[in-house]
Image (cartoon, rainbow, N blue to C red; front, side, top):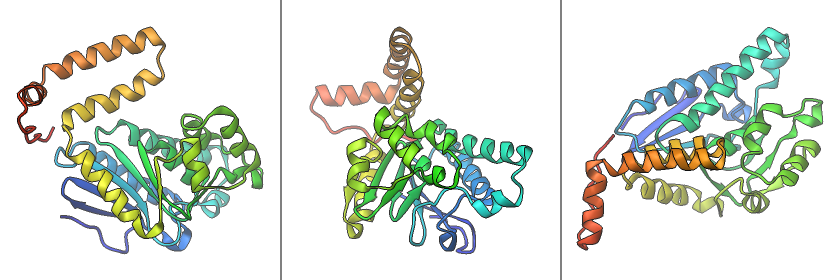
Length: 264
């Protein structure tokens, strides 16, 4: 079990194959400063190479999940060079969430706005408290949520995504569930238990199969139908060559307990 000092902008807690990363700028509603994004990037890079970690949970300290980018930091240097660097850094972090082999679950409470909503959309799975709210609200200050749009439009139907982006209005957790932004909504008091239950369920699956499946999920989504089937054929063929997969199939056919899945 490991943890980082409470003074850090990011906390990490590892237990039972589950790494929980907690955005720790609660007094700033966990706004994504350059420092915080660097800390998340470093943690994800480490986790990607750590075969003992089977699931990642992304959470926020304080009253909110994440309020998006730190506008005060952006305002201090709004020049093109600084903004290109900032949003490139953010985009890399977002893509890393999908590129690491482990599934990532967003634990959402309070508000998730702009790049905070993007974080929810970019995670593989998301569970929200009933009181959670979501918005791509940049348009309200004259800044269209262009980079959050990339993740949001890969989660929501077009009309709902466009309404969210163009109005800047907040939606509640039930609407987020209906639109496909989150997987499940639970009372605030049950949020930790619901996240822990899902994380434990995923941690009990074959890490190799999970890694192969997650990578294929995102690559085939961006491919045409024929290419997607070709990629899927290659991945499932490779999966069938894994010793543990064959052992799992043998156990199912012979009605025996599943094997203890080894780390990647």
